[in-house]
Image 1 (tube, helix red, strand yellow):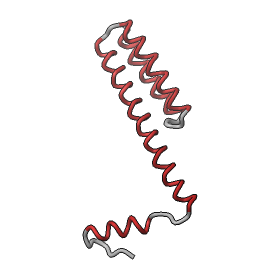
Image 2 (cartoon, one colour; image 1 turned 60 degrees about the vertical axis):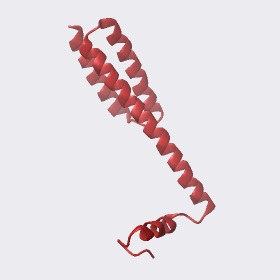
Image 3 (cartoon, helix red, strand yellow; image 1 turned 120 degrees about the horizontal axis):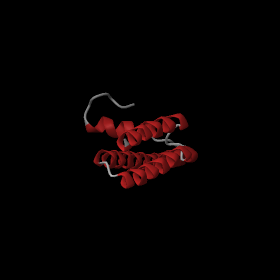
Image 4 (cartoon, one colour; image 1 turned 30 degrees about the vertical axis):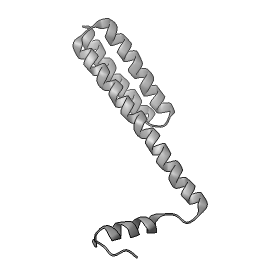
Amino acid sequence: MPVANCGPQSVRLKEAVDLPNIKSAKKRVKVNQTKAAINRTLKSSLKTSVKKASSVIAEGDPAAIGEAYRAVQKDIDHAVTKGILHKNTAARRKSRLAAKVNAAAQ
């Protein structure tokens, strides 16, 4: 067992202890890491598209606002189908964005 707070050696021992011995468990670790990376990139791209749409809304160009809003809706719906967002969370985000779009249109 690793000794707590004894420098870098304890970290290496902890990593060795936490690794699975069973082949299927090793595969699960690899698959989980891959899926976590994919989820992280999808979440990041979603946040980026929402920020871009918010900046377009702030500028006030009606044609660009409509295009950006449709793109963000598509990204949000894609995140729901991939399991990144819950459907109610997506509905709330789209609703808030629509309110901003409508406020900017007036």
